[in-house]
Length: 124
Image 1 (cartoon, rainbow, N blue to C red):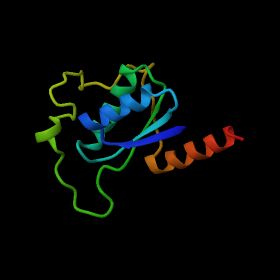
Image 2: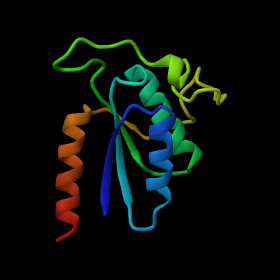
Image 3: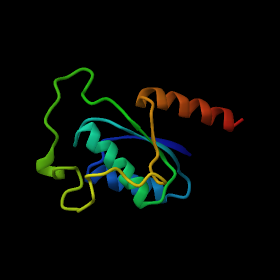
Image 4: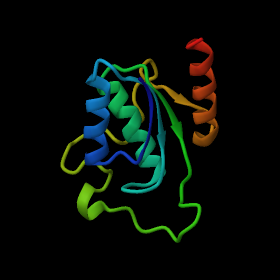
């Protein structure tokens, strides 16, 4: 099964990512990041870090930096820590190394359409 995870990688989404990445029947084709547990910049950096740590070739697309319909809440750093991974110490000052870095310059909503169409063509 091909899967896109729309995520704000905090502790909970990191666990979901690792489960999907390890599952033999899941082809994790993309992560799209959104504002939520952390800022969108932190979510994108966290998604890139997750793909680097798992040596995945999963593409990462940055999404909206605020909700489209409601007033945004503050990131939940009291639950997920200042960058989303609680007490886990990562080098969050720099993005992952370029060979593992898979940030695609395209909005997340457009990425979902592109990935779907690409997958539909390959499944024929």
